[in-house]
Length: 237
Image (cartoon, rainbow, N blue to C red):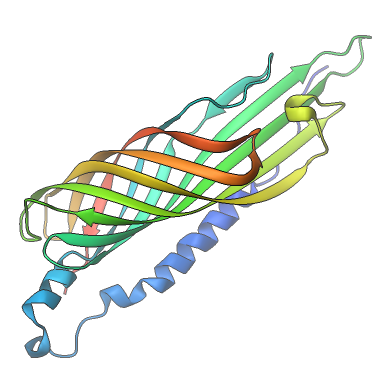
């Protein structure tokens, strides 16, 4: 009688949580208030007005990925969190941490009436990008702002393989976790609408390209167009 292998908590969630904590600590200075408002120049006020953070969820339509005959595939939405540092009235520097997961599952019945074998490979792609964000038509005081962005960065790829019996998915292999590093770039456009002084909504489209130094789920390149929407927050002073 066939059964799915028992799943333990995915180590990738711990990796992502650690990255988010590190980003939070690295950007904690963004929320510090100057000692005296009299010493703040107009340029510094513009920089502070663009400082913020946000969370988004969306799709990433990755194409040309490896596929094994008889296997089933599923993918989660793309999640992303970001911190933003203002540079001037129209420019900001955005640092993002993302997460996208793809699962491959292969079930094979026994030829002699015994237990079936199963194998699954859950792959996580974690992009760590820094992008220049341009608001070409608006200033921080305006509620509705279109933007353009482009950036580069690193990426982590995590494979979590679970096998029962003699697997043949991606060449087979023992259960375990493998970590691969890579690099990539992103570019896109979108709009932000602030419904209060601090909070707002954002929606946009981005193209993401990631190349790893080894295979992640049978592929070394993940590329495709994505759409996302989420909530934004502007730091208050």
